[in-house]
Image 1 (cartoon, rainbow, N blue to C red):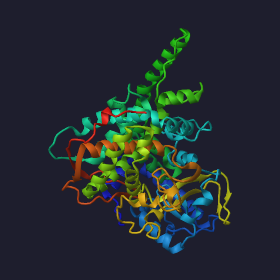
Image 2: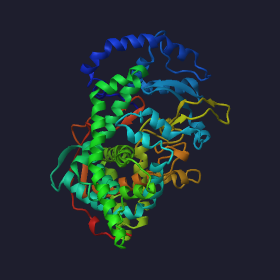
Image 3: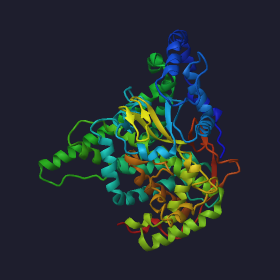
Image 4: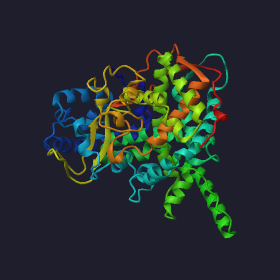
Amino acid sequence: MAFNLSSTDYKSLYASDSDALKQWLPLAATVVLICLSVTWFGLVYQKTKHPLANPPHLFQLRLFKQIDFLRNGVEILMQAKKKYAGEPFRMINELGELLVLPPSHVQLMRNEEKLSFSKAILTDFHGHNPGFEPFGLFAHDDRLAQTVIRKQLTRTLNTVTQPLSSETTFAVETIFGNSPDWKDVRIKDSLLDLVARISSRVFLGDALCRNEDWLKITKDYTVDAFKSATKMTIVPYPLRFLLRWFSKDFALVSREYNLAKEIITPVIERRRELKAEARSKGENVPAYNDAIDWVESESQGRPYDPAAFQLLLSFAAIHTTTDLLCQTLLLLSNEPELIAPLRDEIINVLRVEGWKKSALFNMKLLDSAIKEAQRIKPNGLTGMRRLATQTVELSNNITIHKGDRVMVDATSMLDPTIYPEPEKFDIYRFLHLRERADFASKAQLVATSPEHLSFGHGMHACPGRFFAANEVKIALCHLLLKYDWKLSPATASIKPVVHGVSMVVNPENRLMFRRRKEEIDLESLEFN
């Protein structure tokens, strides 16, 4: 499977602040020279037995290897995987030095408490900096974010199906319209708008889910924060304060965070007033089935940052869900004959069950198709991001030192010994794997395993995957029943854009669509 890095995307990541950076380049050069010998010395004499796959040349700054990894990460990973044959190795990626464990080590680290996902996010996304508060929230000791997602969001899945489907009806018509003529669209932009709208219905309720200013923030903040965090990481530590002063991207992230606070704070204050008023009158306290109310309940009066919490949900959910939905629809549009059996299953299930609890679970072919799309284009070729909070000795005598960044080689999802013809998009693959005793528990979309790490694995597996799976299925029910789809002539390839070893749907991909008469009225179905 071949991957190509978009040079346009790469340049856009680093060129926007060139004028501002010129002001501090002389100082930067001085500090870099001071740091040069220390950086090289540290790399050469680091106390580890694991080989470094892409070491700097003599007196070469690690910075250049970090940038090189953005362009050639897949090649570096695959060469190291071949060279070190099932053994751990280190490599310099865009964030710094990383210990990569082979797939055979997944079970050894999956529940290791000293390997922290939240601390890795805090560190990699610089959560201590102004505007990056959402990434710091995930690492709070009270684990409020994790509690709300695991306890409230997952527990209420059945009760949010109705608002999800209803908002999808509105959003799909708003975005795609009702024309019977073929239309051409940049599909990622359209689906990002769709997912932002329906996710916001559950996260924020009906008062804010159609607020265009909020929707813009939810779509932009993650991208802007990621760009800024990557810039900060590749710049030597002594110079990072200059980025905070001069970078337009950093100023933009702070503005978006502050605007989020301005939008959401009045809503929360008004809700608190209504609840206090109801209590004082002895009336029933208003209840809201959304994430605003869930975090209010779980915080139990402790102070928290509502804007940071909502932006964290957007970071964790909206772009990754959009990418999965977009990848699935692109693959189906590339082979339109695959859509018919999926439509048949959706119609048959919904006619019998409506939107009951079991309906989405019983769409097993649809489940298989989505998981296959996720397998054939994972979010990245490494997974299970961790930071060692203490030195860890794994059972096979591998030492992970405190402060080490760790990930697992996730290329098993493209391994022909596990998945025959791995380059083929087979919507029946995981449906058939359910029939195998050794794979039955691993074949569902929400299942995690060493063979499929898109949702992670172990104690830090994505807690929102159950919601994401339902959201993608509901969206596809509407999109496949209400529209015909095919590739646009403007789309020559549906290969992803690659940054390092991360892969995203090419934002330039276009699809053709037209309205069709759905066989079943999705809006009239019963909810239970």
